[in-house]
Image (cartoon, rainbow, N blue to C red; front, side):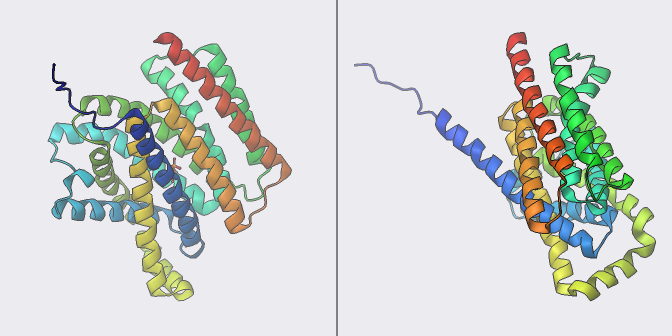
Length: 322
Ligand code: 3PG
């Protein structure tokens, strides 16, 4: 009787799905923790350039410690060449600038407004893909962007905390994250042997190099007095605890988002990201008690429905082109 020598599969499709669901759940949970802690910190310490830098500084220290302690697969993985550094630099610098822009917005307005404006991210990615890579989006897909844009516009105009800094910060973040998406496709394709965790570790290190000098220039002169005021209001221990906690949350949620991206297609990842924003808008309203006007609620709902439609059409389109 022949002996079956096929090795047992490492994991079944069911197990794979469970792992993906686990990453998504962790991504959402840590993202909620990040958004609520981050906004609470801004209420006492309105220094978005510095706080953005602290996020990536804590992440870099965490990765360096993990690497030194031998947990290479949980951090940088392997050393990279100069050329590889250059390849990661392009999307990583967009990641850093988009991060600062989002934080300028978070500090300026209700975080629900920032996340509503950030539902426009697929619109930016689609337009940039078309402009930079010549990948045209079919007309029905383009039309589905209309309710997204209209809904966001309506929601933003009805928001009680609206101001220009909050709105433009979120828009600049959309633009730079759209560029990040286009640029990282190339990088991810070329650096296949680097895990998603390692790629994010290097992205964090590069973000630190981008953010730190900018924060020093913009906020350096008033940083000490700002930190003193924050310490007076919440105490030194809480202040430092907040900075470390928010940095860890930021690093981990992004790492889980990167791990998810490595396991699902970009369109599904986009959907997960929008679901994440719905959860955040809901929890932030409950946590901070900010009031959403009826116009903002209806506008947000239209934008979210538009996103669902856009995703559906994108998926159909992808299936057809395959
Ligand atoms: C950021 O600072 O990068 C923000 O948290 C927004 O990004 P998001 O797309 O991860 O929500």
